Image (cartoon, rainbow, N blue to C red):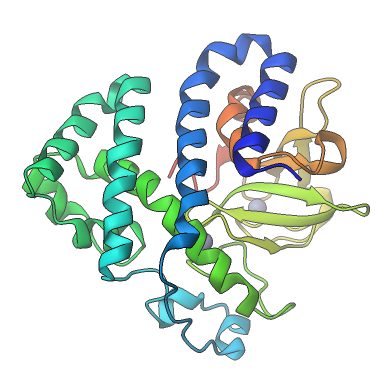
Length: 291
Ligand SMILES: [Zn+2]
Ligand SMILES: [Zn+2]
């Protein structure tokens, strides 16, 4: 059994070995994902938050859990202190590895050090509960870049929380293409187990939920002739899954070919060539794009 950090390192080694032209662009993502996973491994030491009552009927109607209850946002001081630590550790990594975020990362860190960052407000936005433009305005930063930085820093906490919430979602009640916990679209699709059961992985909280193999999560069309798989020769385990009806695509992995110990987040960040392949075939990314 590998730790998440080991799975990420092995997945990047696999990507580097099989896609040498990508090697240069993989390093920054690897640095970020490894540090994020380390934080995630430290999160279980936090005091547990109560799990609100879930009405399965609401899920059956297609209403995700966080739409009815504040399941992710919290003002608990221990959680905010962890979010602060997460910003202090991840922002330097992002600033150093992604030149387009260097100034923004520095500005947030400076505000944090001077006690002038609305930590609770920023966490609430990253957890899906608010408009970030107010905090962005206070800092003089573009809202989209601040949202990206905050989402990365909140992710270890949201993943930890999703791990607490996930078991409460009963099998078979949720049929949507967005996350049953937080309502975000998937970042990647994964086939697991001997028969290749399909799971979608949330782009915000990393929760995985079952989804039919022949259905498009963007437009819900379930005519299997509408699906097109784009992949490189001999790398069928990594593909762009396109829908001929809505012309959207989602990255997809086959764990039976790549190994069950794969880290989906590494492939989600590393398979840049598949985005190109999909775009060349007239597909655009689903609403999860880069968020
Ligand atoms: Zn989610
Ligand atoms: Zn579709």
